[in-house]
Amino acid sequence: MERVLKALDAKPGDLLLFSADSEATVARVMGTIRLELGKRLHLIDENQLSFTWVTEFPLLEYDEDEKRYVAVHHMFTSPRSEDIDTLDHNPLQAKSRAYDLILNGTEIGGGSIRIHRRDWQEKMFELVGLSPQEAHDKFGYMLDAFEYGTPPHGGIAFGVDRLIMIMAGRNSIRDVIAFPKTQSASCLLTQAPSKVTSQQLRELSLKVQSK
Image: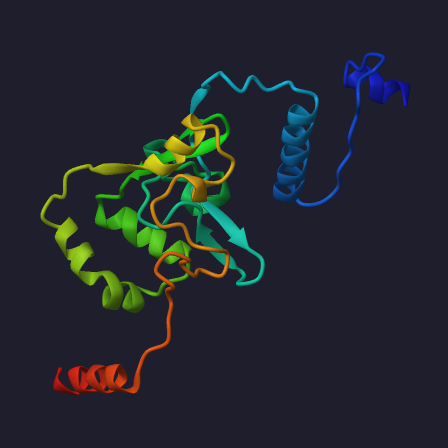
């Protein structure tokens, strides 16, 4: 116990927490506890706007259920150029060129630099379990376009509603969006989804048949 206290530089009054599970589960649980204690002990300045960029996300993670690699962001996200060789021998160590903008712990924007080279994209398809034939059938148009010299490109999307939620001091995004849905995905304002009449179903059926 003394060695643990020394390693953690613990002082009287400190709280030491231990958690055992996968790294992702431990991080999520400890993060939730940290935020809850911050609220209860009034350690969070509600009037301060704290921005930060999160970069160098892992490119891939391993899905134990499907027994294959999956993209952390999406499979069109570019790896860092210095990590291309890493994909051949240790894919989980490769970092992506993805980025999130965080405000007071809430993601308000995110995006990535996309892959613009055919060989890199084919490598990603291979890693996530797509055969060359499947990749061609689903994304052949894009792979062919890369042959013409696609320029490096990327994007970012901002959640204005999330930003307004923080500025308004609300805890739920439903308080600031125009047509909030309930947890069952129904709209209390328009009563959607609602039942359709037999006539509407017939009209829909005729339109489908005509196409």
